[in-house]
Image (cartoon, rainbow, N blue to C red; front, side, top):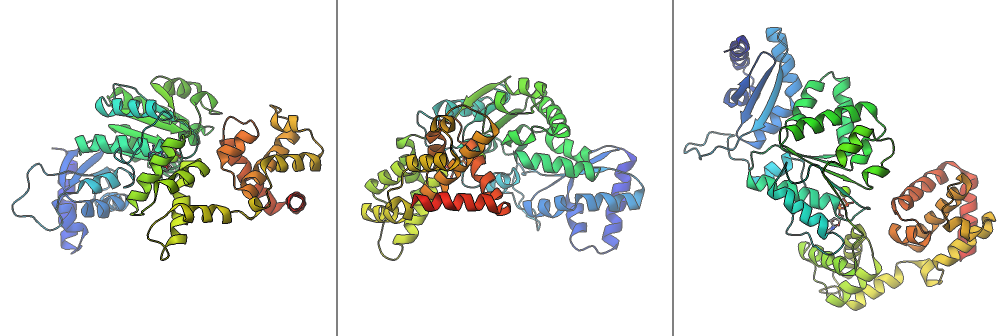
Length: 439
Ligand code: ADP
Ligand code: MG
């Protein structure tokens, strides 16, 4: 028994005397899992208790320090009781599997049952299944990459849920890449990197979604490198997703690059027509929306990215609500014919490209070619912006129109030009003139 243990007991006694109404009973009920001179791990039996305590970790550590002059790290976890207690004390119900998913950072929406498989994602699906069956040993890391909306987040979360369903006591954490960064920076500022490390380095499964966000940030890459090694060397699994393959992530440290390639790298392609139809049917069913198969086909033909599918479904639904019982062919056709004013005027992508080129006096072959010259790249971005905004093309279509392989360039263009317009009134004028001459 360490002396910390008796300090801890007296600390709790003191809280009791202070009549601390919630903290005291919760801490008293918490079970000590591990206690050393530096740390105390406590488990609680309910997510309510966990939420309450975990949020106050720093505060409790501070109170303990004030009381004992001992600096310790506190860690809370939820333990599912193996057997149900006959007399169930207040605040110690079993956490449901949903509680456990939420704790792991997972969204209710994504699982394998509502994931449709087709040629564009079947390799990723098979790899994900292999990871579920052999976490930590099949492929480590599993690196999934692909454009926006191809289902990377969905499939990664589905793996996490399967692993938790098999063993709810596994330590699983789904972390968006920018959260990893922000949390680390915060912990450096608060001088609590010890806790950050404890949180990440002992996981059985860590998913970092959109890992490209850590590139170029040295301290973050350094920390992630150690996190990665620590998890992998103790048999844990790592899943990473990104909008591009490791070799295309700029300013990524070499040692991370080689780690990323040390497992399996799989790309997910844009969904084909069949997959888009299947996804629409799944989404409609989940939302209790009735839709004719003919209507599904029209939407799947017109909308080529997954995120757009859900959006289109909901928009059409909003239009028919209260008028029709279900979405039929007529409803969809009406929706699409009205959705874009400029489309009615029969402006097509070629017109946009032609107009931009004549306005800036450049050749179409330059705009569509590989040139990275700053001026050409800028006119290309303007074109992409207009194609997306005025014609309502999807980012993938926009990229295709300009022979760009990666639609994230279109996304980047859209964001950049939208931002510039706000600050640069002469650019705004130019774009207005181009738009006017399209009509
Ligand atoms: P990404 O992370 O690659 O940008 P998401 O996983 O967020 O994409 O997917 C975008 C949307 O499309 C989500 O609503 C997701 O459920 C849906 N989706 C993508 N692929 C599939 C699929 N194969 N089956 C069912 N839904 C899918
Ligand atoms: Mg995602």
